[in-house]
Image 1: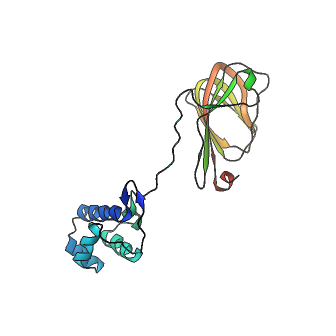
Image 2: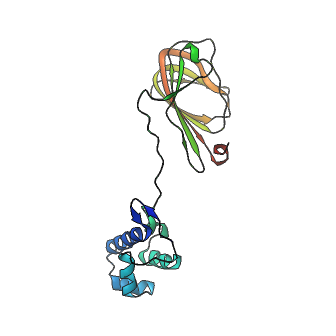
Image 3: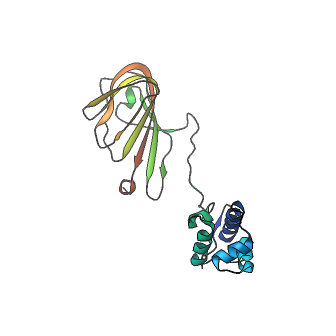
Length: 201
């Protein structure tokens, strides 16, 4: 039997009851007709729709087949509470990196680690030109979105002139970073996503 779990204040039985009734009514199927399609009694269908019984996996499969929906549709809304990170403007953690003392500010906007992945967003502000441009290399895929100013950004041997609204996505393993600052101040958002193996490190 499928054990009861609680999510959003409802038991698994209650969620299944709501979904079965929802799909049955949407397809204009009567309790009697659903009972006939599944080979169950009308009393059993009624118990399921009133959350008075726990369904076995085979019962759920029969219901899903009779309602022409995937079994997962009967669990919609059971997801455990998902983690989120909210960072108010100006409250991101400042990260010291090469170039930080010459007007390069790296502000972390949060870090979210799931079971199989991790993302790290940064807001980068460059207010002064520098002779030294830090180059970075790391695992994962990086997405960069230009907010203000103009700069030339390098990735490996390639160069990209970036203006507000421009976006760049690249493999973080390749050396990357600002190469030339054309119009200050420069602000851009960068989000790095790590995969299953990378998130484990």
